[in-house]
Image 1 (cartoon, rainbow, N blue to C red):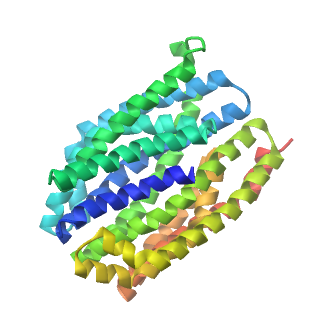
Image 2: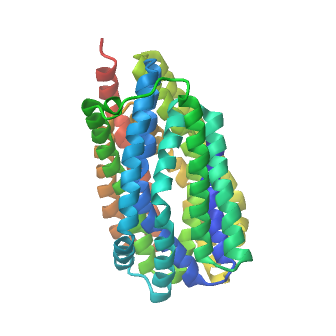
Image 3: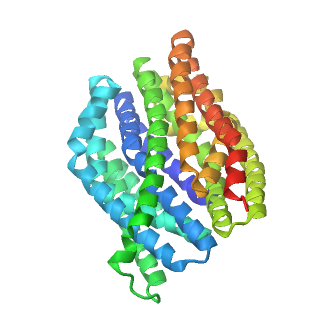
Length: 421
């Protein structure tokens, strides 16, 4: 799963590099701003993946294949309706995003184009969330890796072809994403159909069981609130970057992509923690749960340390490959250490998020995120006013640390109640 997740930040780096080759800081800033708005919108619906993974893992742990299928179809219904709604309100989302980020006019124009094209893919993107969540919940890591490589590989190929070779720039990157999501959905649904075909046909009443649907929606509600707070934090970070000027905004976009690369190192073991914790809870296996926590902590710090060393050693060369603008390079290199060591600050947050999501302890996860968001806002504006861009990056580290420590402090109580005999 680590290998699969690493293709996602690679995709973001390729998108940034494609647009960066045009040597236009406003276009690069527009991509950064547009990506933030899309993160707010699309990442808010990450519960379609993580919620599906958790419920499928628990059903798998208890040996209930029929419930696995039912969870999948319930999630598909929610995904399709959510995606179609976003397509209808895309113009409003673009307008609100422009108002919120309050960037310079050339940045705003590029951002608007990118958002409107990308949101067309919302329905198929959400269906892909569910497919991927189902695969992860069953613990089929090779198939998960294949699907990640498929969607991101096609995306990279089309983005380079449309963006550079056809000269479409930022719109080419957006159309490439749309094509890749559609192709991945067709392949993914074909795979799921083959898995489901030997089983009996499921009735509409089973798929829409009221009690089960309420549980899913309650879980998804808490995860949506968590996701909103998470993307709001990154959005505020980008907005405050924009207030420091286009060069700082563009440089921070490059550094955020590098940080997300290290973050996806951690997402691999977090996905493993989610699946294994969910399976342990479904089976009522206390020892398996404790072993999951121990192993993912060790792997998390090891992977984060490796990522930090790589970024520290090769970050300047990586920045140079992403953007050709000398001024942006200079600013990004100056603040590189903050991005290089953010992965280590984020280990407890990623690990505990995986464990709590898999166990469906969504209320505690939601509350911890709200506490960490409040701490982030306070430090962002305080440190930002005092130390400029250094203050923004310091606030991001505070956000990561508070997230992890809040969840860690809540785990003993939830563990005792979950495995009480």
